[in-house]
Amino acid sequence: MISDLADVVAACGSAIAVVVTVVFALRQLRSAQTANQTLVAIELLTRDRSSDEFLHAEDFVLNELTLRHPPPDVSVSDLPAEARHQVVRLSLYYNGLGQMLAFAAVDPRLLVGTVSYRSRQAWRVLEPYILAERAQRGETYLSHFEHLVHLATHNPWATAVRKFNLQSFGSYPAELGLNDSSAQALSRQHENAQQ
Image (tube, rainbow, N blue to C red):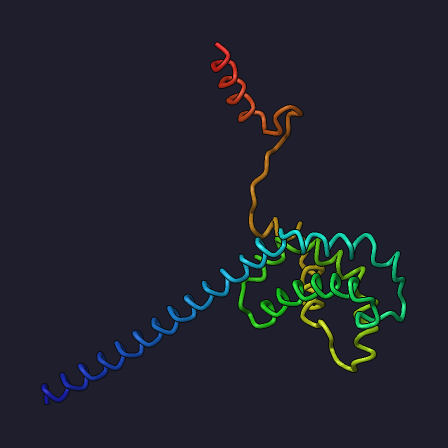
Protein backbone atom coordinates (compact mmCIF):
# COMPACT_ATOMS: atom_id res chain seq x y z
CA MET A 1 0.00 0.00 0.00
CA ILE A 2 2.77 2.45 0.93
CA SER A 3 4.79 1.49 -2.13
CA ASP A 4 1.74 2.08 -4.35
CA LEU A 5 1.28 5.51 -2.80
CA ALA A 6 4.98 6.25 -3.30
CA ASP A 7 4.69 5.20 -6.97
CA VAL A 8 1.69 7.51 -7.48
CA VAL A 9 3.51 10.42 -5.82
CA ALA A 10 6.62 9.74 -7.93
CA ALA A 11 4.53 9.56 -11.11
CA CYS A 12 2.76 12.84 -10.24
CA GLY A 13 6.10 14.48 -9.47
CA SER A 14 7.51 13.28 -12.80
CA ALA A 15 4.45 14.55 -14.68
CA ILE A 16 4.73 17.95 -13.01
CA ALA A 17 8.45 18.11 -13.86
CA VAL A 18 7.70 17.32 -17.52
CA VAL A 19 4.96 19.97 -17.69
CA VAL A 20 7.22 22.59 -16.07
CA THR A 21 10.07 21.69 -18.46
CA VAL A 22 7.78 22.00 -21.50
CA VAL A 23 6.42 25.37 -20.31
CA PHE A 24 9.92 26.76 -19.77
CA ALA A 25 11.11 25.39 -23.13
CA LEU A 26 8.21 27.09 -24.93
CA ARG A 27 8.89 30.37 -23.15
CA GLN A 28 12.56 30.17 -24.09
CA LEU A 29 11.65 29.46 -27.72
CA ARG A 30 9.30 32.47 -27.82
CA SER A 31 11.95 34.63 -26.22
CA ALA A 32 14.52 33.60 -28.84
CA GLN A 33 12.05 34.31 -31.67
CA THR A 34 11.23 37.73 -30.21
CA ALA A 35 14.93 38.55 -29.91
CA ASN A 36 15.49 37.68 -33.58
CA GLN A 37 12.49 39.75 -34.68
CA THR A 38 13.63 42.67 -32.54
CA LEU A 39 17.02 42.57 -34.27
CA VAL A 40 15.30 42.78 -37.65
CA ALA A 41 13.23 45.74 -36.45
CA ILE A 42 16.31 47.52 -35.13
CA GLU A 43 18.07 46.90 -38.44
CA LEU A 44 15.15 48.43 -40.34
CA LEU A 45 14.92 51.35 -37.96
CA THR A 46 18.61 52.23 -38.08
CA ARG A 47 20.13 51.18 -41.39
CA ASP A 48 17.23 51.76 -43.77
CA ARG A 49 15.95 54.97 -42.21
CA SER A 50 19.37 56.62 -42.31
CA SER A 51 20.21 55.57 -45.88
CA ASP A 52 20.53 58.26 -48.53
CA GLU A 53 17.84 56.59 -50.62
CA PHE A 54 15.33 56.61 -47.76
CA LEU A 55 16.11 60.22 -46.81
CA HIS A 56 15.75 61.28 -50.45
CA ALA A 57 12.40 59.46 -50.73
CA GLU A 58 11.18 61.02 -47.49
CA ASP A 59 12.22 64.51 -48.59
CA PHE A 60 10.54 64.08 -51.97
CA VAL A 61 7.28 62.80 -50.47
CA LEU A 62 7.07 65.43 -47.75
CA ASN A 63 8.20 68.44 -49.76
CA GLU A 64 7.64 67.87 -53.49
CA LEU A 65 5.06 65.18 -54.20
CA THR A 66 1.90 67.24 -53.75
CA LEU A 67 3.39 70.18 -55.66
CA ARG A 68 4.34 68.07 -58.68
CA HIS A 69 1.40 65.66 -58.63
CA PRO A 70 -1.49 67.19 -56.66
CA PRO A 71 -4.22 64.90 -55.35
CA PRO A 72 -7.06 63.95 -55.39
CA ASP A 73 -7.67 61.04 -57.73
CA VAL A 74 -3.99 60.39 -58.42
CA SER A 75 -3.16 56.86 -57.35
CA VAL A 76 0.30 55.56 -56.57
CA SER A 77 0.36 53.59 -59.83
CA ASP A 78 -0.68 56.74 -61.78
CA LEU A 79 2.48 58.58 -60.69
CA PRO A 80 5.43 58.89 -63.08
CA ALA A 81 8.13 56.25 -62.53
CA GLU A 82 10.54 58.37 -60.44
CA ALA A 83 7.80 59.76 -58.18
CA ARG A 84 6.25 56.30 -57.83
CA HIS A 85 9.66 54.89 -56.87
CA GLN A 86 10.03 57.46 -54.06
CA VAL A 87 6.49 56.91 -52.80
CA VAL A 88 6.79 53.14 -52.86
CA ARG A 89 10.21 53.26 -51.14
CA LEU A 90 8.82 55.26 -48.22
CA SER A 91 5.47 53.47 -48.06
CA LEU A 92 6.92 49.97 -48.06
CA TYR A 93 9.29 50.90 -45.24
CA TYR A 94 6.42 51.96 -42.98
CA ASN A 95 4.24 49.10 -44.25
CA GLY A 96 6.95 46.63 -43.20
CA LEU A 97 7.07 48.11 -39.72
CA GLY A 98 3.28 47.92 -39.57
CA GLN A 99 3.46 44.24 -40.54
CA MET A 100 5.79 43.61 -37.62
CA LEU A 101 3.21 45.24 -35.35
CA ALA A 102 0.30 43.32 -36.84
CA PHE A 103 2.07 39.98 -36.35
CA ALA A 104 3.30 40.94 -32.87
CA ALA A 105 6.89 40.46 -34.02
CA VAL A 106 8.11 43.50 -32.13
CA ASP A 107 7.19 45.45 -29.03
CA PRO A 108 4.93 48.31 -30.19
CA ARG A 109 6.70 50.72 -27.83
CA LEU A 110 9.90 50.31 -29.84
CA LEU A 111 8.22 51.51 -33.03
CA VAL A 112 6.00 54.16 -31.51
CA GLY A 113 9.00 55.70 -29.83
CA THR A 114 11.06 55.87 -33.00
CA VAL A 115 8.78 56.39 -36.00
CA SER A 116 5.62 57.93 -34.59
CA TYR A 117 6.06 61.48 -35.87
CA ARG A 118 7.70 60.62 -39.17
CA SER A 119 5.19 57.91 -40.08
CA ARG A 120 2.28 60.26 -39.35
CA GLN A 121 3.84 62.96 -41.53
CA ALA A 122 4.28 60.51 -44.40
CA TRP A 123 0.73 59.17 -44.04
CA ARG A 124 -0.73 62.68 -44.02
CA VAL A 125 0.80 63.35 -47.45
CA LEU A 126 0.36 59.87 -48.92
CA GLU A 127 -3.16 59.06 -47.75
CA PRO A 128 -4.99 60.48 -50.81
CA TYR A 129 -2.67 58.60 -53.19
CA ILE A 130 -3.06 55.38 -51.22
CA LEU A 131 -6.85 55.72 -51.08
CA ALA A 132 -6.97 56.34 -54.84
CA GLU A 133 -4.86 53.20 -55.33
CA ARG A 134 -7.23 51.24 -53.09
CA ALA A 135 -10.18 52.46 -55.15
CA GLN A 136 -8.53 51.10 -58.32
CA ARG A 137 -7.41 47.80 -56.84
CA GLY A 138 -10.44 47.14 -54.68
CA GLU A 139 -8.24 46.01 -51.80
CA THR A 140 -6.49 47.26 -48.69
CA TYR A 141 -3.29 48.53 -50.26
CA LEU A 142 -0.65 49.41 -47.61
CA SER A 143 -3.02 48.59 -44.76
CA HIS A 144 -0.12 47.77 -42.44
CA PHE A 145 1.24 51.29 -42.96
CA GLU A 146 -2.16 52.62 -41.91
CA HIS A 147 -2.13 50.29 -38.90
CA LEU A 148 1.25 51.69 -37.80
CA VAL A 149 0.04 55.28 -38.15
CA HIS A 150 -3.21 54.49 -36.34
CA LEU A 151 -1.23 53.08 -33.43
CA ALA A 152 1.15 56.05 -33.46
CA THR A 153 -1.77 58.49 -33.51
CA HIS A 154 -3.51 56.85 -30.58
CA ASN A 155 -0.28 56.41 -28.58
CA PRO A 156 1.46 59.77 -28.88
CA TRP A 157 5.11 60.11 -27.93
CA ALA A 158 4.29 62.26 -24.89
CA THR A 159 2.25 59.36 -23.50
CA ALA A 160 5.03 56.90 -24.29
CA VAL A 161 7.53 59.10 -22.45
CA ARG A 162 5.41 58.89 -19.32
CA LYS A 163 4.98 55.12 -19.68
CA PHE A 164 8.73 54.59 -20.21
CA ASN A 165 9.49 56.81 -17.23
CA LEU A 166 12.18 58.54 -19.29
CA GLN A 167 14.32 60.93 -17.32
CA SER A 168 14.90 64.57 -18.24
CA PHE A 169 16.68 67.52 -16.75
CA GLY A 170 14.67 69.80 -14.48
CA SER A 171 16.10 73.00 -15.97
CA TYR A 172 18.52 73.82 -18.74
CA PRO A 173 21.22 76.44 -18.34
CA ALA A 174 21.58 77.96 -21.79
CA GLU A 175 25.26 77.25 -22.28
CA LEU A 176 25.28 73.60 -21.15
CA GLY A 177 21.74 72.32 -21.46
CA LEU A 178 21.96 70.53 -18.12
CA ASN A 179 20.24 70.79 -14.77
CA ASP A 180 21.78 72.89 -11.99
CA SER A 181 23.68 70.17 -10.06
CA SER A 182 25.20 68.73 -13.24
CA ALA A 183 26.08 72.21 -14.46
CA GLN A 184 27.87 72.96 -11.19
CA ALA A 185 29.86 69.71 -11.41
CA LEU A 186 30.83 70.42 -15.03
CA SER A 187 31.74 74.00 -14.16
CA ARG A 188 34.11 72.73 -11.45
CA GLN A 189 35.63 70.24 -13.91
CA HIS A 190 36.08 73.02 -16.46
CA GLU A 191 37.75 75.29 -13.90
CA ASN A 192 40.08 72.50 -12.76
CA ALA A 193 41.02 71.75 -16.37
CA GLN A 194 41.93 75.39 -17.02
CA GLN A 195 44.25 75.55 -13.97
